Each structure stands twice: as C-alpha cells, then as structure tokens.
Image 1 (tube, rainbow, N blue to C red):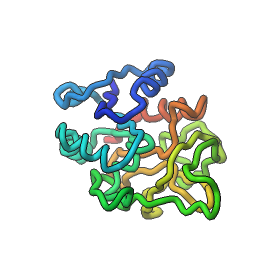
Image 2 (cartoon, rainbow, N blue to C red):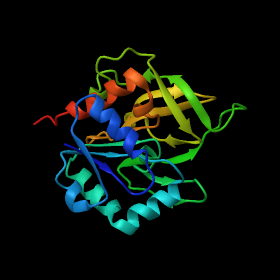
Image 3 (cartoon, one colour):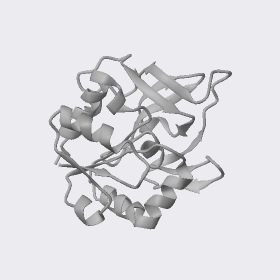
Length: 206
C-alpha cells in the first residue's frame, strides 16, 4: 500500500489515478498516523520550495518523513517533491530541505532556452539497472515542468536529461530506498506508468 502525502501542494489525484491504472493500491492522507501504516510513500509537489517546506514543517511531516526514510521506508518524490529531498534550495533565498539526498536545488542555466522547462525530454540512463528503469530503453521520453534543478553528486544520479545543461532527472539516495523524479511520471504516459510500477513493486533486499 502506497501513501500519497497530502501537504497542500501536489497533483494528488493525478498520481492516485496513475497508481490505480497500474493496479497499485494507494491512499491520500495528511495524517502521519495513517501514513505510518503505508508500505511506501509518494511525495508529489507543485509550487515553491519555501512554501512546501513550511507546509511540511507545520504538520510535522518533515521529521516524520525523515525518520521513516532513515528507517528504510521507500519514498518517491515527484517534481517539487523530488527537490524537497535535498539539503537546501536557493529558490527565493536559501531554505533547508529534508536532507535525505546530498546536494542542493539551484536555478536551471538554460543558456537562452525558455524557462520554465516545459515539455518532453529524453532520459540518459546513468544506472540502467535501477529498479525504477526496469524494462525501459535508454532515451525514453518523459514530461517535465520546472525552473530549478538538483545540484548533486554523480553517485545520486540514476538518469539525467539535457536542457541547456545536464539536469538530474531521476535521483536516488545511495544508502536508502529514496528516489526523486524531476519529471512527472503521472503525466509521462506508458514510460511514467512503468516507472511508477517499478516503485510500487520494489522490495528492499534482505
């Protein structure tokens, strides 16, 4: 069972509908007690990083998620939800993130291309054996909407894309089952559904 985290800033129903489509059981909740009963979590997100962190902090979900993930509860952050996994963001000043993946969130340097980056871009697989990429070919196209990107080490990048510069598109904490997708799997048709299925079917190795 996947708990979709409601903190007031996500495409909750789109994610829920995508999970329903692949037959993955899920529920939407803002209640830590209810979310604690889930096997895995998805953290969606649309909007500004500081607003999102304030919302998570006000509800206590920031420490709840951090502690749960450090105890190896699988989590997938989507778009802004992916950015929240990092240590800090430079959006509207400097804001501390959840600190589950090393690195920070910075503006895209698109070298003259339109910002925000909106549309379909291909993935360059760095770790094709990752369970979320299972069954997908290198060069798979997914759908992006964002103005900021992760600045993180190579060890955290599962796949990247190119939009004026190389942008981490799918990341993972090297020590934990915590992933972040800068793109929207729920809007990325068959490829996105495959990635969500990979997360839903993931099992921690003993």
